Image 1 (cartoon, helix red, strand yellow):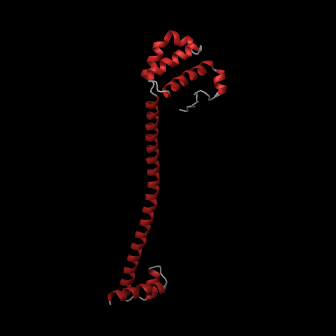
Image 2 (tube, one colour):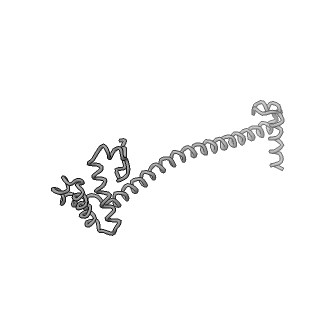
Image 3 (tube, one colour):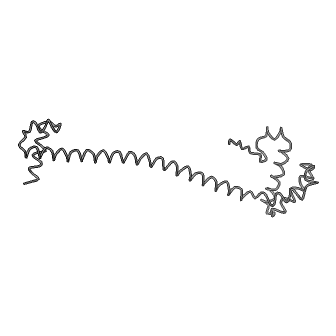
Length: 172
């Protein structure tokens, strides 16, 4: 769903208001209600005064005269601007939370995968080294020459000797 929101408050979108007299008149009516509210009138009184003003100025007169009570009732019961704005804010906050959680989960999953991969890699290398060192030590204990040990363990002779030296220092 794609929605285009157009500001129809008085003083905005002049081109649209010039094309649609009804919309312009409605904008004036709403503006008068807001003005009376700013002056301290109750919602009820502000609606009455705006209706009177518009009838007097021939704005929406054809609707307001015969349907004055219905217009007032609708405005009093169906539209509470502050309530609507609170609802929009609440929906925006909820949507923001949902989007934030989804993004956080995606980022967390990516980070978790990276960390898990790195940890698995470290553990794998550590286990390989432990097993290789054990194999080198066992072969040396069985009298296998260091050159053959190095070849079997896929090490240089120097690396094999270093492992054997490390094993000797641990046992001493």
